Image 1 (cartoon, helix red, strand yellow):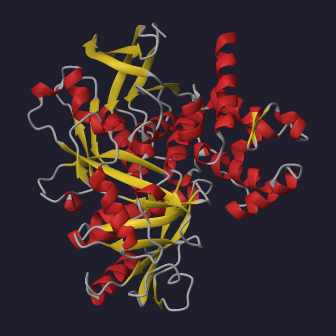
Image 2 (cartoon, rainbow, N blue to C red; image 1 turned 30 degrees about the vertical axis):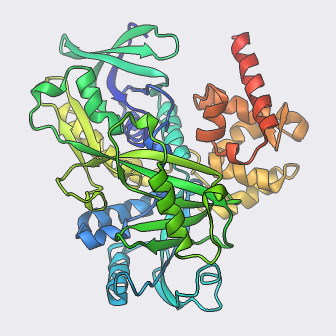
Image 3 (cartoon, one colour; image 1 turned 90 degrees about the vertical axis):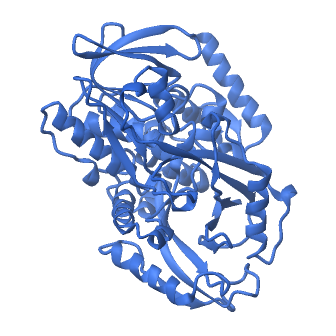
Length: 504
């Protein structure tokens, strides 16, 4: 790679970086995407798993942002139906919180802003003797139900990177940008392998800093921030979630108002669990060190217990995760009121284009990516139009235009495979499941069975095509298998990966 030159180097392998790389590669740019650790290794794998307009932001008059997010919800749902699907959100009326007329007005406006939607509109229901009211305490009598989408956030990152690579982008993980400098009107990018510590240098015509919560630290680390006095700032806010045993039946989620005016989502997760989140706590450490605090744990437990008949304690928490959101700092004192919008900053003192991305959220990553690449097109004198709004994400190109019909077809095609395994493959890989199944006629063609319906062909696919390098990459980021499989299965996978590494 020492002699290679790229049109664009994207630094940061979260959802924004992967989305930018995909968009740019699809417009004919030669693209290098580098990530210091693993793809989706931080904020992008620690969301509440929702693709949504952000109904609570209407209260802060963020109408434009909500409308844009709802438009993106529709685009993503149509183009990535394997990773994104509708979910009913039940907002019980709490007479001690916002008045019912205000809630009704907000949900009505949400429907208006989502004009042209594929999802059902909102409705008002009584909770007594319904599946929605069954798990709640008896203080709730009615609720508003509206629709949003649920998403596999980590797979969304991975498949954007896979899509970029399918369009000839080069993707490097465990590759940290150590230095940026302009040489002969090009960017010279010095990259350090974070495992071997070897370094190499490539050149690029343009660079995008999409490092999320590290956006400011990255600029300081490569010596760029000091001469840009008008740089935006981000506020680092930690959000934590807890995972419980499955606490109620149904595919819906609950949206619970809190005394501090925040809302908490409670949704069934991965078939066997319930997810509760999120919190908002200021954070000033390395984002990779984010862990749930005692106060956050107590906050989420109290929020759950205040609304549900079944009570929980800390001993019921199976797992917890935290991520740090880089919110665009608009000077607002309350973290809940800080905008979830984004800003693309052009470092104009450099001739070769250099952009930094501030803020943003999972739902609007595609629009943000398109905005970034549009800016790059103008700066480089190119005129290739955007394309991602109308093109399915890799794996989402179902001929049937319906995920459920696609699954039924795959169950018929692979009739020798357990139905729940086919479903898991379809959700995670979409049509790309055929990459490792199409030549198989039975379980004997899937290679080693590691346990818990995990087979060698899937692991080989992840190692070969999705940049997985160890068992953690596979069971927590490329999938959530870690919540479902035994320690013995994990050891078997790890031993297999180690044996392949030794062979190489």
